[in-house]
Length: 343
Ligand SMILES: [Zn+2]
Image 1 (cartoon, rainbow, N blue to C red):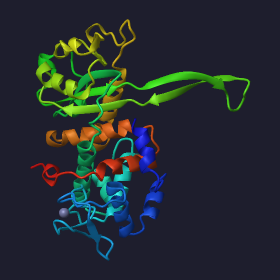
Image 2 (tube, rainbow, N blue to C red; image 1 turned 120 degrees about the vertical axis):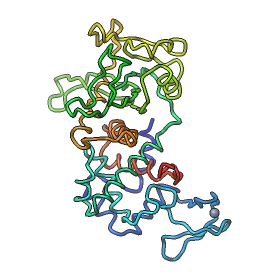
Image 3 (cartoon, rainbow, N blue to C red; image 1 turned 120 degrees about the horizontal axis):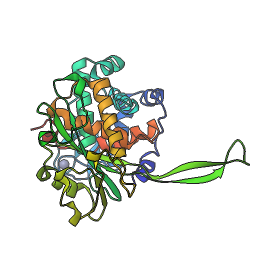
Image 4 (spheres, rainbow, N blue to C red; image 1 turned 90 degrees about the vertical axis):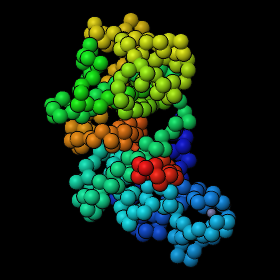
């Protein structure tokens, strides 16, 4: 579903590598025009009053609104607002965040784009915020959706993001934060076709009709009262839900076709072939990011970190350049400044 959108936003550029990004955005004006295009698609609109009658200043950066008389640039109301860091550096940062499978640390980013570590931390934080805040929430997950929770953090470094322990008290650890995951399974099929090298030989090829999509929410606990409203908000009624036997999921059968894989008896695929393995795979991604790059995720910022990893997972079948465009389509969306700074 989101591939159509990618095609729409790709028409003006095609970044297949970091060098493409750097060469294309050789001036700040060009970077700003790219943002204008992503944000307004040729129809600049006042971010203060939504009026579309606006005048462009001769500096090619600023606009003035005919209605409220306010001045603005395309940066107002986006994650780039109030930042003195050139947009070109921002775009390289976004590219790097998306291109590295495990993400990038603020330390590494600071070195790569020559900003202070304080600035790079701030940039990463805003990029993650932009990705999460503009999640494509109009579309509920559907088809077959796997449900599971994991626990992140904790004082003991050796226990990061490990699986919950079945039957443990309240299914949690005191020093860890629970994250609820919902994963819409990939829809794919295998077809038999002649080999490209040897047309007399038949080979199997996997055709992905729609890739897996994951959404996660940081929750206070893993009780039904916390998890069920999130499931109802994000998963279309009538879908197939697959979870383990955890009691918090009981009662979902009235709105969904709820199927259970009993992890207590070491069952990972039930008799119908249902499984939560794809979501387990995502938890592995999350765990790798955590251990490999971030080392620690504060509870306050955990939702943003999780959004970043989910975004990377959801776009992992895209080419790097498409992913940058897709990320920009999210990030250039306007967001309320209060929300951005968490007030
Ligand atoms: Zn205005």
